Length: 185
Image (cartoon, rainbow, N blue to C red; front, side, top):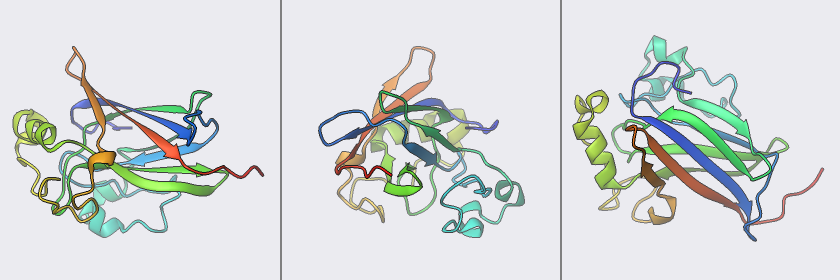
């Protein structure tokens, strides 16, 4: 997913289950996030979100970013309801805590569109100590204090679980619960 963009290597693992914790297979999971500089790629031609994406604002009108597909991807859940993405830890942009968007679709119908985030202390460590992030420094809108325009002070359920691997990479994982019966077609 990184398409040669720099950053802390990260395995993003998501599992989709129903309210009885039973895995849901065959669902499309799409994820997207910004790069270490806080810009999104602008080529959303493969995304279901392409009509709602504000390319100029999200890419900073950078021509290279507008034509790129970095940090965007989609997969179909397996029999265990899982998808795994090879990506990098995101950067930040003004007004938002570091986050990753996701969408779960069933037969071209949205089941959920939301986003997950990272603990402030971990995000600060990445942004102030790792070379690919240091030039921008700590995010200007941490989760604490409720200043993030999406999470406010209700972010606890949206925090990724994290494991730092011995090779320096990161594992970020979360379970997504679809709390209603999916309609069969």
